[in-house]
Length: 263
Length: 244
Image (cartoon, rainbow over all chains, first blue to last red):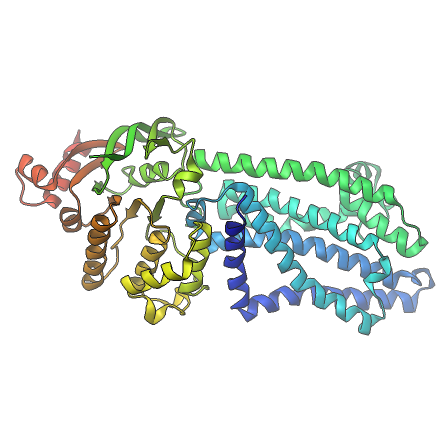
């Protein structure tokens, strides 16, 4: 691992973001809109139904957590897509970069892109809705970490597809998380799902992460077994994601998709 | 003369198509080898295998005594490539792009290297301009600067003067000629510009349908085929090959 090269690839994306106001605006825009929208929906339920009395904080906190996952994954994919769109893909792969260096640089850059979008969204929830995600306490760090790992893992799956199939795989990059959202049990407990879906959902770390968030906010109980299960599943998926990325690179070298992927 | 590159029985098959069929050739130190052939004849596939971007079905590419398949990363430090079909990120300035690639190639004194290349390739007037805002000629010189950022001993040039005006084209050709002599480089030049190939290359490979159909010095090829120039040789060879 060469830190200089990792820093070099980070700089490539840093220069891009720094020089483009629309890109910064785009990073901030979607999380902000999403949080405002969900904030008003949550407030509506709180005012008009006693049943939802305690849910402003729960729904909004889950929305922020979900958005963090969404941004992590999309940021990772975006970094890859930027290389394809700018027709720089071949240049990158003829540079002496190891796959591990490419993954590490993208993981670090994706985190910064995600935080640029998330921090303003978190900051506005307190004055607008009187809610702070920090109420989750120390477990919040583990929830974010777990979501980030899963987001990156999804990014690795999608990037593997991009590497192998090129820009045709782009739409999958955008829709991947929307497909998982219903099974992730972000806004409701797993019991809401039909039995078959429950069995599938138990294989996703998202269920344990959001169950934990609700447990802390509603019941004021920290259940570390949820965090443990989420990390175990994350480790398995991350390992699969990294292996798939290496395999896709090897297949791309066989099939020739590294040569003309931007065309 | 030391051989920088040895290509041995190199082949590439895609499903039902044989893109390159058992080609062999060498490039010496300080030599510019021309690679000529019609579109789709296997030139890009050959270059991609030499760069380690594409895994050969059979055969080997030996660079500085090492197999590219086994030592890809270490050999890529000594190589570089330009092609009109790949670009540098458009939203980054020329300087930012060169810094990024300097880092990726592990260049130690990046600022000094950029300064040197900016002077030699006349980049100073637009060094802080976004790459996407440059003219074709300017972009071409920036790509050349990127290709030289790591002081490569082996350079692959795929149509380096395509779509350039005559003056810029001449500047680029003169520059390539000069650096190959000064820096003891081995260069593989794929081009459709026959005058350029005649001017720069000591030896030429003619490719068609994935095989080398003839090779030699430009003068010897012209003499051997009884033609007036390299373009006529190219046309004759390709027409004969397509008919057979």
